[in-house]
Amino acid sequence: MRTDESGRDKKRADIVVRATDLGPMFAASNSCSNALVPRLALFACAALASGAAQAVEGLIAPGEEKFNLRLGGIVHRFDSKLALAGPQRSREFDLEDVAGAQHERTSVWAEGTWRFASRHRLGIQAFGGKRENQRAISQDIELEDRTIPVNTVLNTEVKTTFVIANYQYSFMKNEKMEIAGLLGLYTAQFRFKFGATQPLVDIDRKTTAPLPVLGASIDYHINPRWTVSGLLEGLKLKIGDVEGRVLNFTLATDYMLTRNFGLGAGYNATALKVDVHKSGFNGEVKWATDGLFVFGQARF
Image 1 (cartoon, rainbow, N blue to C red):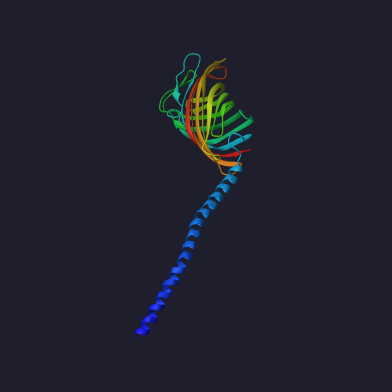
Image 2 (tube, helix red, strand yellow):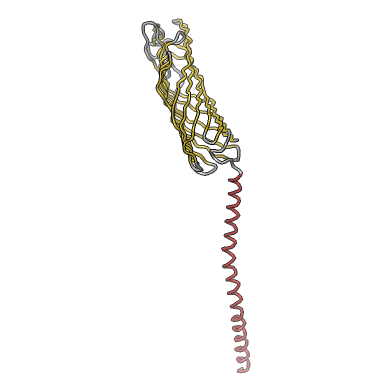
């Protein structure tokens, strides 16, 4: 019995010794693992940073593109008034609430910019629309010395085209921001048609009002793909038979999905008033719109 117990004790001692001998091996292995993990993490971070850098390197740097083209749609909300004067009298009326023109309308919107030098840009923007409706008017309307009585079923058509051209000079430009002053021409073309059978009404008048504008723009580059932009322009001036004032504000953002293509959205608000005294149009237009727009963008 004592001999068996002695043998067992010896075996246990051998196992303890062997386990003790393996301790440094486990410690060494643990040390290697602890050193390897940070190295693998560092390698992974470096690989991700390298991939991101390669993606950014493939983009056109913001503010360094030669051409920037945008095409999309805009949803306008209108608040407009018109007065067509005759030799003796005129009275302003609301085109939406009285004449029945739609309060909202969707139209195509386009914009293009040519950067012909690092700090110099030429830009053009165009949009327009047509609103038409037939309704019994809710009050008397005076059109060129004629009074159209209340409840007359009046056909109203309003067509507009806006073309805005400008030159911008960037007096501050770096990797994060570009601030420019601008000089431009805000051209508004209006056509108003009114028709009725009882009493007989057939009026078709159109005019074009080119209004110079001064303003400023800012582009803030959150990163090489994402930009937020703002623009404010306006002026009050009289040129020949046209006297007018305009204030135009735009806030937009765009995100480049690839080197040459991106998407964007924005908000625009415009307030315009023109007095025109010509043989084909004698009257006053008050035009206020605001709306949201979305677009696709191409940079080259």
